[in-house]
Image (cartoon, rainbow, N blue to C red):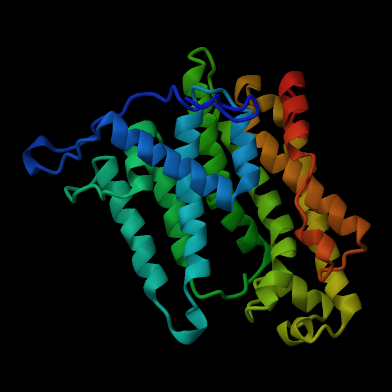
Length: 327
């Protein structure tokens, strides 16, 4: 057998599969063998590694016992996020709604809320096998929030963007906190910790929409909040044509200031989050901080190619923070 590289993550000892919650009278039980669970896990892991490398690196720094569940959760998030890229709503493509409804039904089946059969799909099997104790309400919130934003319409205001971040990234961070907390039986997570996670999700969403704007412009999409654009005298047309550059910088500056404010507030409350579960938040905090500093160093230029670059030191930053129990 070929010796595994010392640099490669070892996920060979993943927990065994389980039979999902079910109504025994409905004959809807999805029997999952160890082999099927292993294949689903590796499929989920590859999906995260390929489409969300920052989350993949973050998972490598987390407790190994919690990694299978967190991989499955992040694979679902990748699956949901990719739906927007697979459809063109400008041409009346409504398939995104059906795909998101598929996941609402799948989650309901996996967690025993529906008599429908559990889909034989890798992410669904991954959730069945490794995330059986995940909060299904948070998972449904992930899907429902994506449904509410189908259509690529601008956020009406910065508060709507903030709520979107809380319901998507914030919910995912809460799920990761739970996954880590279950590994450490003596770790009690208080509601305030979830509030910190959700506010961090908001900070990330506001910063990330700046990074996403230039690629989205190439597809004819503007998602920046209407109120911030109006206050600065910018319009979608001026962004498309690269007119009113000072106004565009004003939009970016206002958004960055709000993201920075939220991030600083999160850091001031980090003591509310037990040290054992802080790795669930570390990557999002580090990435948000990196985006803020990159935008500032590029003088709030929303068109700067530097905004598309990943943090090359992310893994090392996470390892240092883990050793020091810092966020």
